Length: 213
Ligand code: SF4
Image (cartoon, rainbow, N blue to C red):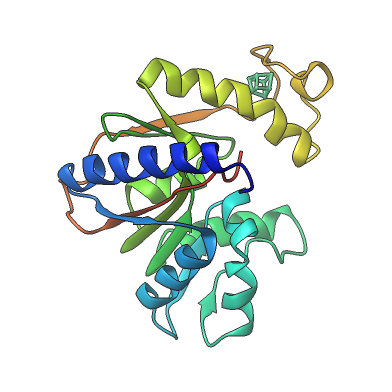
């Protein structure tokens, strides 16, 4: 990030939310940049591990998917599928992964992780299934409360829809029109309130920067 004031702000927000997340019994870590986040993930995930992926701009920015492809890992590669059926099969396989990597759409100041999915594979795996979940997120995803999280999600959903060329009304207008079509992106919303049920299962790596959408 080139803007020193923005960087200062994201560092302050990121460090504060990391403390809150640790109090909520997530395995919480603050890092300064994506390179440090990648290094930390690679320290956590051993070679040979069975790895699932949630759709994430942040993971793509981090370049870690190629590292898993090229290294000695058992990556369930949802991005290398011949057709939609195979992709859905990978979603199922990822539910039994040893490590599931993704990002989050929003984090409230109280440490709640708020997410909206099209198919539900990511939010399902975040809650239950994979032995470990590693979430990498920019501090720009921190919002005041659940209402602000919902507002953030509705703001980014049209961008996401446009990015993956989904033919929804918002890809034409740029704003959510609460569409009622089968192409709708916003179908399954979850709130993870804390990490107390299975302490250490969910890792959140907060990057003091602006990442993802
Ligand atoms: S509900 Fe429909 S129109 Fe609104 S953001 Fe989601 S996909 Fe777009």
